Image 1 (tube, rainbow, N blue to C red):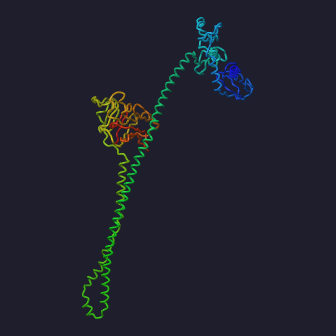
Image 2 (cartoon, helix red, strand yellow):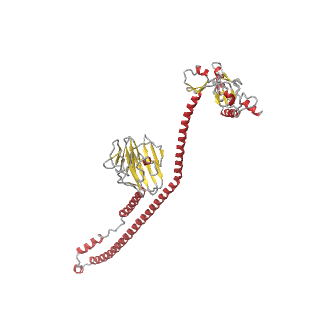
Image 3 (cartoon, rainbow, N blue to C red):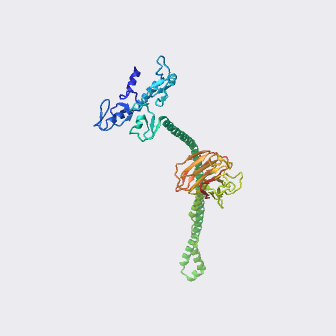
Length: 515
């Protein structure tokens, strides 16, 4: 009884069948979309649109809101009804049907199917009790065609009507095959895109897990540098303060000695003053001349020389600040060696590794793509296509090197182990676990290692690139030398072989080492 009541609630009051794509009016009543659309079409041009059940009026054609929940319930009930379909003609004992004829609206077992009409109008489908979705709601005939322009399933009468006249129409089976084929193609692309996203997410998660370790390593190195700076500053401070104390002691001794000498001279002068006063008081000229037999010139010279050597020594501020400045410059020089990475010098391209589609300049700095075979002999060191190594590799160093590239064509630059393959698929930069590369093509950067190519969201704005290597820390970074310089990507790993600069160019591109 409850099942019957539920079915009544799921029945459209217009077609008296279970809801098919149910929609709701503003008054709250539900109908099949096609059913209410047909009713509203008949009301077009009248004073108002009305609900078939409650007669609620709408001044404008009502907007139909899809009732997803009601549609899901109706579909569930309908699927349960179609679980077991019995043959219409086996009246004495129920036999499961194998097909349903849409024209006859009858289900057939295998026996009755053999005698059933094979004409095209008798369309056979999987057993079902529901025919309302299989027949035109207007003409009540079987839906056999599909209008590709309006994306509607049609009966024969609909095809001949004005609405679809001149439109491209296909048999439903063929239209279904075509749409499924397109859907499978989209499905494949979605799966591929999903895998790429999963791969990218995995790469980002790996990068995220590495960040704490990288941060801890950087913090440790910074703390070591600051400890060294503090130690050097403390040592410099002690050295300068000791220099000041030394100068203070020397100046103090010098000034004290000068004071003693001047005090002695002052005592001598006091005695001279007393003697001269006594002589000046003698009234008898003869006695005076007999008593004062000294040369007055010597007396005057002694008086004038009393202050010639009385200039006191002082602290040498120039020397102190020169010592301080020199110490600070030495600390800064040490900081530059510790913080500012040195540019690698002497990077030259190795002609013995250059493929024959690359021209190497006379100064061994520029690699250019060439349509003319360079005719170099085939050796085990030579790349098959588009690549060239530098003449030397780097290990246990922190360094960088810069390159400038052409505006045209495509290129890839990076670093590789010398054991990289020289021919075949895995000789390409980044398609193996022995090389790391940055590519620019069609105004986009991508980075690649071990076959994992990741597009970067940074829009290129310069044709110069810096490659930074901290071998011991396991860091390999790419920067764009624009204004300002921009970080593109950093790999964090453990290197097991020396790393050689490597360049790849094609499509009329060139690349030059700037060091």
